Length: 235
Image (cartoon, rainbow, N blue to C red):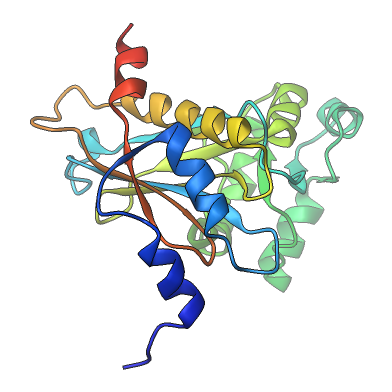
């Protein structure tokens, strides 16, 4: 078994075996940083749901108040006037059937998000095998299948992220960069937690959020006490 490096072991040793309030967890994560690049900070939540049942799937989108630290490369697949609308809104790549063909034939995925108009979904539907595994398939539930392409592009560029439970009932969401001001990361994380709380399925029984952790790309996980966020969400 490969031993952990000295840096990560030192970082882990600085994190106590307890849950920290968000406003304490973020500075701690930044304090124990040792990587030489600007790491992404991820929020992971363990939910008390059974994702095998469709009515217990937790999914949604949220616009982070301080974005992700980088602008997403957005592809819009549309037709007619909506192509010009997408270009005016700042979409990076815009097209119609030509984009569908390029993705299908070349397995091309040089973009971070895909927005499609409803009239193009018959064609876009053929791209499930390419876009699906990468989490890029447009979906009405996440606002990426819409005729209001201008609003969708602007929201995506502003830092809209998607959250959804995986097969093990975990939700993983990026909430910014380790170089962010602590307040920015705290507010981004709290926004995601609140959105997941509000997305609780009505059929879910027992404890809904069983665990919440904040981590950076190379750093240790820090357990989060979300009681204050839960109280604010219920208010």
